[in-house]
Amino acid sequence: MGRAAALVSITALAAAACTSSHSSGASSASSSPSAVKAQGSSYTIDWVGGPSSDPFWAAIEKGAQQAGSDLGVRVSYITTSNPSAGPEDYAQLVSTAVSQKPSGLVTGDFFPSAMGSVIKQAVASGIPTVLANQGFNTWQALGALAYFGQDETLAGNLAAQQMITQGVKNALCINDIPGALAGEERCGGFDATMTQAGYKVKTITTPLSDDTNVSVLTQDIAAALHSNPGVQGIFTLGVLVAQAAMSAVSSAGQSQVKIGTCDLSTAVLNDIKSNKLAFAVDQQPYLQGYDSVLALVQYLRYGLHPVGEVRTGPLLITSANVQKVLIVNQQDPGVRGAA
Image 1 (cartoon, rainbow, N blue to C red):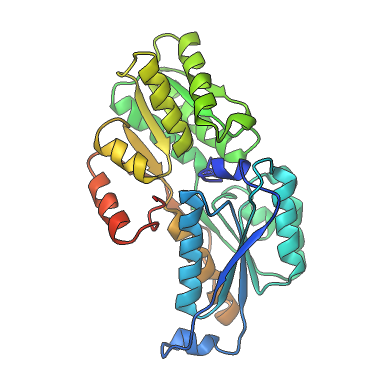
Image 2 (image 1 turned 135 degrees about the vertical axis):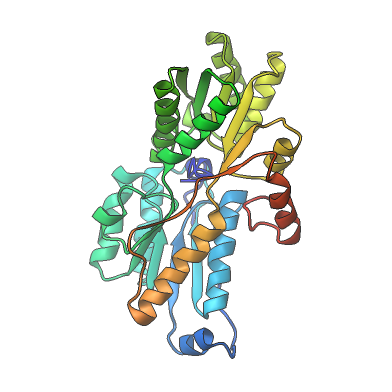
C-alpha cells in the first residue's frame, strides 16, 4: 500500500471509503494488431485500489486505463470513498469484484489478515489474478500470477542509506498507517539499516484516525520531536505526513532536521527542488497500473506472464534528478503520481 503507506501512497487506503466507485475505459477500433486481436474478446479487468482523489492512486488508475486503451480491453477501477474504511472494507471490494466474474483481477494485499482469503477465493474461482502495490511477500502463496510494485523493506533501507549519506545519526520513522503491512515494512527497513550502521532510530506510530489530518499529524510529530531530543532526520511514509513533518520542524525551530518521504506530489517535488525536503522514495505507481493490466492481457491471450516479482521501485528522487520528474509532470500530468 501507497498513498503506498505503500497504501502507501498507501496512506490513502487507510483513509479511503466503503462505497465503491467505478471508472472504466475501453479502446475504440484500431488498426494495431493488439487492438484487432482484442475485438470480440470482451476482456474486462477489474482493478481494486485506493481513491483516485489521491495523486498516488490517480497515477495507478491512469496507467491501468491507458493500458486498457492501448490493448483494446475494458478496465474497471474499483475504489472507495469513506474515510472510515478499513481492512474488511477492502476485502469486501475484492469480493464484489469477484462476484462480477471479470476476465482478470488486479489488487494489492493491503491488509493480509483480511484480504488474503478473498484473494485466494478469486484465484480458486478461476479468475487470473495479479497483485500490485502490496503483496511482495505474499503473491505466490495466494496463487497470483505475478507481483508489480516494490519491496517495502528495501524502500526503508534506501531511505535510511540516504539519511546516513546526509549525516543523520538520530532519526524517527513516522508510521501513520498502523495495521497496514507497508508501514511496518518501510519503518522496519529504515530501522534495520540505521541500527546496523550504529545509529539511533525510533519508530513513532500515530493513530490511524489522524492519517489525513495534517494539523493533527503536525501535533503528533511535534510531540515526538519534543520527546526525542537530538533528532536529525525524519522519514515519513506519504506526502501528507511529509507536509506535517515540515510544519512540525518549522514550528519547533529545528530547520536543520532532514526530512525524507515516500511517494510524490507536485508539492513534494517542488519542496525537494527547494531543499525543504531531502528526498522522496518513488515506487512509480503508473507502471504498477499499466504493467499489471498488460500482464493479465498477455496471459489471457497467450498464456504468458512474468516469472517472479516485477519491481517498479524504490527509486530515489533528490535535488539532482527532481527537475526531470517535474518536466514529465508538466508534459503528462499525473504519470509520475504528482498532481
